[in-house]
Amino acid sequence: QVQLVESGGGLVQPGGSLRLSCAASGTFLGIYAMGWYRQPPGKQRELVALIIGGDTTNYADSVKGRFTISRDNAKNTVYLQMNSLKPEDTAVYYCYGSMYIESLRRRNYWGQGTQVTVSS
Image (cartoon, rainbow, N blue to C red):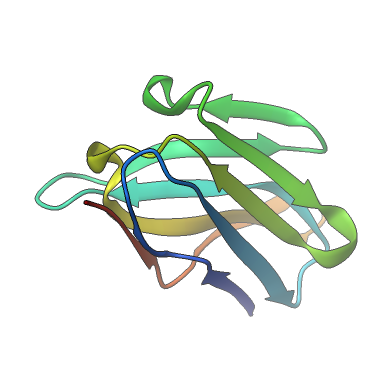
């Protein structure tokens, strides 16, 4: 079993910054991808940023230039540095992980979610 535990959400003013962390623990052979999705109020869950393999990154257009995803392989942890936050970034942010549980077999996992609220 794999657990993804997020931290770092909260309330911030427009233009401010937050840093989210997600640590993976449990039984897995390796990590294919880790990243972040978000679900704004009344909307569907959407991709925010993903890091695949060691260093290939993918960002939603709405966060490019403001958010940065990074990963600490030794700690099995992924980070999301969010700068220049806007009210439309308000959402529940979910950590996502695609883990190798057997050779060439992957399974997807989700964290419990952390609330990010951008408001003055």
